[in-house]
Amino acid sequence: MRFFKLNRKLNLKYIFGEILLLFIGINLAIWFNNWNASKKINEEKKVAISKIAEEIKNNKIEIDSVLINSHRIINAYQDFKNVYAGNTAAINANPTQLKFLNNKYPDYFRVKDSIAMDNGIFHYRGVTRINLEIPTLTEIAWKTTTTLNVTSEFNYECLYELESLYNLQRRVQIEINKSADAMQQGKLDELMVILEFINQLGSQLQSDYESVKENILNCS
Image (cartoon, rainbow, N blue to C red; front, side):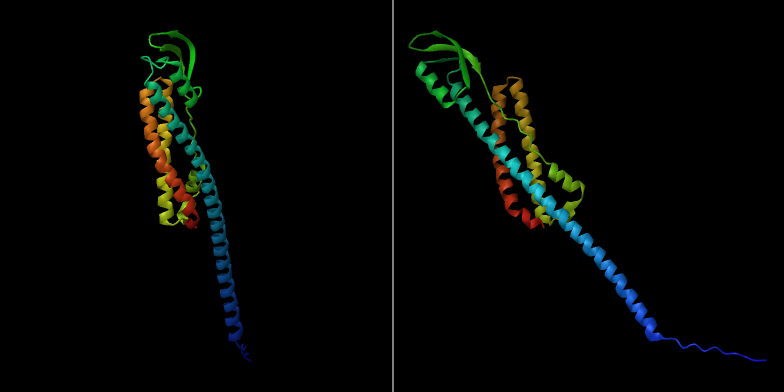
């Protein structure tokens, strides 16, 4: 009987080479996936920052206009309050006073007719017209960013500043909506109080807008 013995010599160098190549290949794949994911996140973050910056810019334009208008309304109301004849549909004044007020606040009070009184004073009947601006301060870019969880990539200081800004913006929007309700109900004294409060909050909001515009690029 013959016995056959098969001797195979293992090529350890070849085996280690294959293992090394496999290890390198896997790590390269992991690195590439991580790099690709990181690149995608950075791109999303850049887009989010750009959209938020644009939103803040547009909202600041809106609030600037609101504050200018509210200051004008408050000043006009205070000046005309001195000559209102018991309500906002009539005033007692001389023609010079009326001309001065109408030049200072065009179209605020429109005269329908007048009746002569004593000492050159006339009783003017008409209507007080208040042009109240009711903008919508948007937060679409901010909500989209938080929904997509892109804000998890923002640093703490940036995130805190943005959260504070949009919270204040919501408070201002609530007061703006209240002013519209007071206007519709003809509560002018209440309207003036609300407008004063809007001016206070709005001034802070303007400052916050400017601060975020300067710092938002640091979010990345």
